[in-house]
Image 1 (tube, helix red, strand yellow):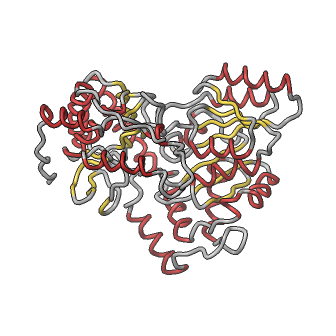
Image 2: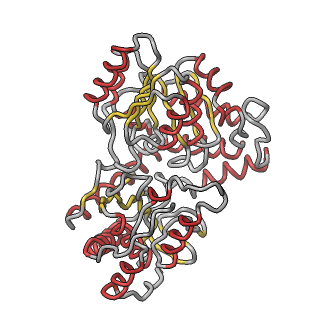
Length: 446
């Protein structure tokens, strides 16, 4: 049974919360602290975080007790879990656990080296082959994290004189990689191929021979929408650019046979570079970069820092992903994706009936836009008290003034859980949006 909610009087407590200062400010105020003492100049940030924590509106760094299941225990309180990334509910799948335990007994828990220096195993080799077959790409390079795959791919392939043209809402790992690789970075408006064409034409007008890398995602994790990949790849061909698509959130979870948005748009084997992560659908850490050119593989192996200078995926991680791939690409995977999409469609419909705005289209991610950071903090707090665990997203994860609740669904969420959560979400959102705005703002650090 779910625990009883903590006693809470919104009429009184929300007024006190607004007066406390915990709803004011944002991370942007503290992004570049000044002062020569690196160890102490972040003290204003720490004080602001502590203020929010004292008043229950600091939802980060929570501890999960047990597996990331649809019904989970977070810091000794059981509730409906929309905060974990386990889209096909494979993290607790008996076959996945069995594969991990079997390889643990066979190989131990550690790769004991980078992929360049004896860190590979027969399981990582099999995983590279399986991903290549799924995506119709001949060459795959594995990374210990998805973040490392994104950052490593861009920094290994792009030089200082090259150009990067990137979707304005692309993952931070890709944006940071672009800025680390070159000063020549331009952002195109989110999913706007007309703007992309304009930027590409402008670059080719002044640099006829320079390399251009265009970066987008298959499924955007904060907006639940997707680009027109055939058109983007066509534009890259027209302007002699290279397209990289990040499939971290869609591979395995959507598309025919789990091929993600690339498969759903008929682009298997047609995208220049595909990168992704195992941490959303495949029950493990790690990431990959796939392409059809062996020379790109060589470049990544020797010049992508997170691949060259980090320990490789452990045999246990590689075997876990392999088993998840086997399930996701088979008949059971099709059933799980159908259950996942049913949950997404139902939750979105219930929230929209309540007059709430869900961004994007049905997918494992349901972004519930609230707008003000203060409202999102209040809603996250109210939901946690009612045993519904969500991820309140504010800057720098999303733009200032566009805060939202990101709900991440699983195949094994039940219809009853979806209906109960929708009621709690609607009530929390209404109370949060009607709550008093913050009266106090933390001072900007000197």
